[in-house]
Image (cartoon, rainbow over all chains, first blue to last red):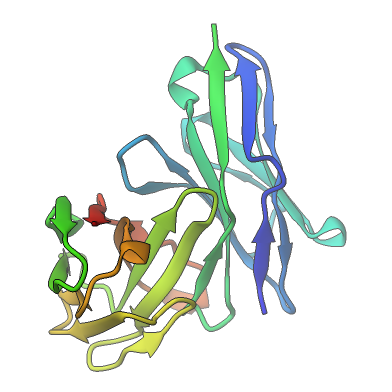
Length: 113
Length: 116
């Protein structure tokens, strides 16, 4: 069965600092990987996705993620965090049949001035 | 395009009451999903519908039923609400891109349900 682990429940960074959110997955075949962001009281918005090709993918809002098959990881990064990035971030893995997506438990990002 | 819409946005129920959460999408997507979100547990799949006329159980289907009314609409029903069903419910839809590429889900704004 597929699964996703986000080991950091809560992360605090200073505005302007770099950010890395960790995501590890378990899946038997080539995974389809996603990062979503959720602002308070809102639904989820896609930041970026990976399914093949270049292992470094660019997303919206200046985010990027790198797929590392050997480490079963898909970490999200941003070089310089803005206060508006404070939100909860979810990593997700999709099945080969496209029908099921499994979400991690999320990482809450706090940005301090 | 409105995307994915959900009604109601908020609801308070008493234990044992029933209600139906409505979801509609205007993106002509084949697949639709219902999730619940609880603190520290991420999103858990309740039911999904791969295409019009089909529905399947997800991780946590107990206490819920669904109806895929047509391609646009996918409703979630709580027949006898319990306090354990207090949660935020999200509907999502998705479509397969040409060539079998991965595709993302589009989420509605959620329904915040409290069962007392």
